[in-house]
Image: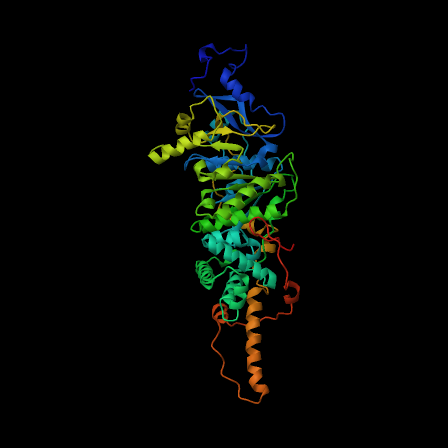
Length: 530
């Protein structure tokens, strides 16, 4: 397989009563993975067409917060690799978050099924395989799909992330940031979409135009574009994702009673047609964790390892502000004890500034059928350290469940590139039955906390009450002078947008929120009141 192999197989030294010793180049690679501390077992080294089970390829547990990339063409085994890593993290007491885009990761909660293929793989890599399920929680965005509803308030989501979801340009994104600033200052709490829509509508009304001018840099036309984008977004059925009770991301850091880390699975099949939304929502989860967690430096194990499946969706059509914020979050969250793995088809799907921070790499097979494929293959090879393999040849010839691996050693240095036959997951490789999943969701102690949506007083109610109060004063003036009340005026822009409805009292929260400036993080996300 390699021109650099100097010891032919026929001359390989043997030890009496044992298997043949490792070839020289293979021994050099294997020595780079001989870690003294706790580690995750990925599989066995492949060299010169042979699987060498005595050369185990591993990732040091403390290095899992140095981030990573799992890449490869469709059908090469990326999802099983996620499952394998997640299982071992859970077994070592580390919580895991998995985004289940295709709906086939729920099986991690159930014991796997032994068959000839599993037995064969376990024997090849010297794996002691036993069917094992892992403690799991299942979530769904806004309750769309099977899972405990995960919601965020508009206030905590922030303008940068929301701009990506609404597909706003840079000018509109900056204007939305000023609108958030205005709402913060005026105590207009943005809980759901109708709250933000009400604030933008107010600022474009006759009464609000002066306040819009005072914000500076926002034209009526730009505010109108934002309002139309919000209306279209809501018309697509996005409302359930924003509201209360807001999900507390500290729920993702729990361990089970037996000490194993909880695997949090976000079920996303129901929103596959809304990729920008779910990818951005995942970024909110990460940004919220970053906002809340204390600095821990280099810990002996991560607090959480977070997997972004279909990661290319996160970067598609992203503004510079979004990419800058994402890069900074990934760079800094390591010191909070959180590891992030991006899962995608090729490394070129990930911006260079982010890719440079991913110390652990598991690269499955790539295709080279077209000129674009060949270009992507060459670009992928350049992202690896120098190796004894011809990686262009290797990457197009890998089988399912095989990958090219390089990770960070316990000292933080890259390990030698190792072609690896990966272990088989011990949990079910496929989804659990729908009835089993539903039962797991409804029996969770978190279900009662998050299942029922709550619509409390916020910006929508406050602005509607303000309109009602202003209309009442207009009616009182003619009556005080003994005149017949003037005919009711045409509804204002705000009334047309938010509707008349039943007005709620301002008394509960107006005084507590007025004039409060919300502190925002890198992404413009706001710390929730716990």
